[in-house]
Image (cartoon, rainbow, N blue to C red; front, side):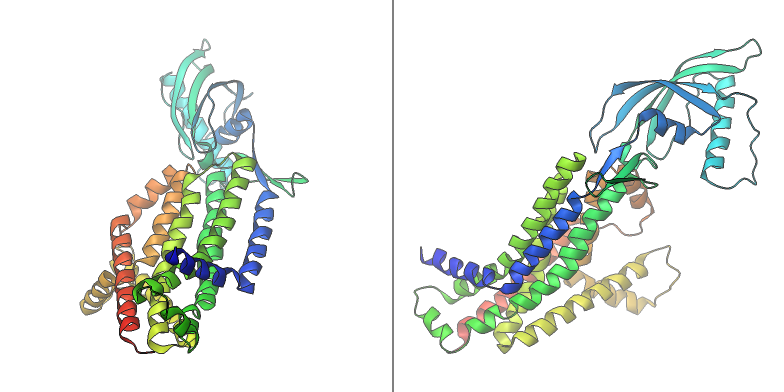
Length: 408
């Protein structure tokens, strides 16, 4: 029970911060903003018409397999040439609509020769096939029945954006999966990640120095609790500051996305754990500096400075190992970067891995695979977690060692 009492004291110290409630209020506003808009799917016939252009007519659309938000669906439809002669392809035409017309023209030309030739794919349309076709006496295509698989999150111009709880609708040019991922990345990586973690570093930097003040430390040391356990419970108290805010913001917005978009993305909810681990790395350094200096300001400056240093090193490291980069680094610089990157926590890797996991969970697997094929570097969850966890162990180990040997 004595250990629970210390943890309860850490929890009270966390929620006693006025800024804690300010952050909860800001999180509530962000959740309401997320709840004020949603994405409404366009009719299948309209999406097909947008995809194949106005040189054909889409009709008799049938649902073969109805999808959810992040899955794919299959549809059967009838495609017929538009009235009049098909325009010849013109290389000087510009614009998306003209490109669609030209691509459809060549697809129909193939159908004239081979009725089972696949229709044009890409942009979320996969596995197309022509089931049957009819030709006129001149051998030109009269009509065809085809099937195609939709990956709805990847399709351009497939949804409308509903704003202010349905008061206004506007056409979306970008895929809904990418848009939702961008919103979730903005919440997890930028609002909760950069802004929230910075505020958390500043607010929690004083937990350990305040504990070590004369009077406070005397009351704590009289308890029959080992000093390392006492310090680790203070560390857990700092983590609670981020855990409670992140759980509220991400959890509430996850529920909102589920009800408004039917997007119950499990990885977005699991991002709370990634965010917690991200802060745990920085806070372990803050605890060590707090024990060594007993200064909140020193803990803040060193932790934020180290965070910026890690970001710069990672950026240069990626450029140095990217074959597509136009910058050539000397070999000794690359060797030094490899050594520093090997021993440092991989916070930037965690962010990149989390973003890719969100893309995949939101049905953007095609975009993700293309990105992975083009990337010069391969990030690893195992390496990122192992090196970051090792950093936490070393920082907390040094802090506990110093805290144990210090006289009060």
